[in-house]
Length: 262
Picture 1: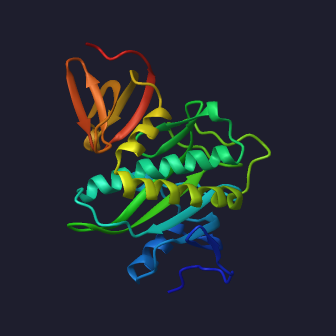
Picture 2: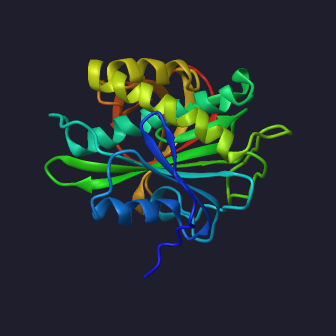
């Protein structure tokens, strides 16, 4: 079965092998298939558009021409951290790299912020997201990081406000050439110093401590409270009255700003 790859000469960018394709079902599906076949670290797939793009929790990701659809294969160094914590740390790292790349390509710094676990917001509206998937057992053998960003077009998203960059928007190629070196920098920092530098940098670019948030869990359960930072493992800290909850998974919605209750 064809994986939809176009016959283009790969580009070499800071240790990444970038393959540019046309319209495919999903760049992450291509990258996942190639990873299972033993593709080397650094394989990157950049598509013009996707017919079946997806975001977190299996949601569809609208993928018109003009926006960024990039998936990257990483084979991280072995670590004693749990697979869930490895994926969580790479989600933070990847979001930072994408935010910085967008700013390198002209996005206004004051407009952009990070929202746990994998969103980039522009003045509170969703601009971009990251989806990290991998081969998970007792350790993580490889990860596929899917990057999606509304560069030229802001597709409608049910229940969420969306945004695109101001015209003239950078091309997907421009953003990719800025993103891959940023990803390499943050990976080297993670492998040399652990998650703490990434956690600190992520918090510096997130919505403020004390922001009122709602966490939607599976099965319809929800909890409201205030953003109290990140745990050392990169999990969300949710202050609810006198109780501090550690959130490892869930949808986070910003619902205004305030101060945590004592």
